[in-house]
Image (cartoon, rainbow, N blue to C red; front, side, top):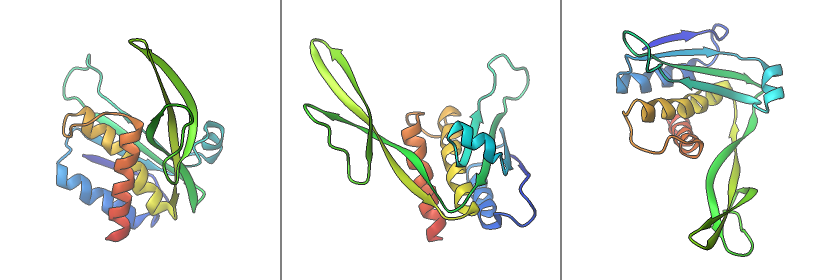
Length: 175
């Protein structure tokens, strides 16, 4: 694993140490991670205030060793409440969100003559500082990497990635 830290000196020391320890447990030699402040203006335009990232998979046409790349951006401001994906709610009649969730757009599908309805759910997670923001976005992108590289079984979707990130953040806060 190659880690490039482009944060200002001394920023997110605890978060960086947590990430390095987590990666060391899993031996990710095919991974490059770049950490940077990111751009608040870009984040605002894209609706990504607080944290954003990307996990890039190797090209199937690439010669030589396949390298995954994760870029983590933590522009802040902190503290911030970020919107996280929750499992959809399926319903007949009127939808009721799970506790602490907000309903999104209602979807409908016809499955063998039966109309199925569901709504995406959202919740909010508080990221208190840059360390917490860094650990959360790392957990989200790390999940994508782990599933895509077949080191972890699961659905490679935003709901699962956000849940994994929340678990990693809880571990960080508890440790």
